[in-house]
Image (cartoon, rainbow, N blue to C red):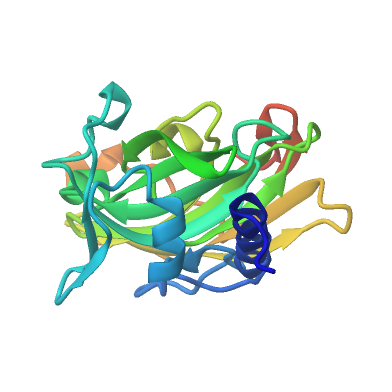
Length: 265
């Protein structure tokens, strides 16, 4: 005898949690080596049908050269970053993001974001009875490569990385995403590597050696400055500070307020 619908939904959710707990790098970095063991996964048609049924007015379809695409339902102000009611989901990660007892999923993708918004955003949904209810969508919140961090109250936040480039700079960011208190990348930023060459200075930096303590209460990352040279002594180059330390170790503690820096600049 086939189990009732509510049981089938719950079984599928447990399977998805198990799959999402496997460490998979969903996004390959072009310029830097990843420092995280990503738990974000590529979103397949099966997961999309489950998670996005209440968000998409049409089933997701694969568009050549674009990826998965759906037309969204009429949405509230919390989804104003969605342009033209079109969403392209790519990745997902499940967790208890809003409270210790909530079952939530973050779906990474894009609508019509441009470079200032990092070409994408994240849709947050929470499970209500047997369906997934959209909570909000925020541009420039990128979750393509993230690890979950369990806070003291058992709620989850995300530790993520992304790279970007422009205006001569190649950047590798490490940042925190707290869905209960959403903010932009600037306010969630923990560390970055910035490699560039301009009229005054050439600099190369890398993030490396990202490690958790054995009890998972502290996280550390090293910022190495492998090159720093003056190219010009022109007066307008005086704005540049002295060379950064060759190797700088940053340590963050897991607290009730998220990841708080306890060592480093």
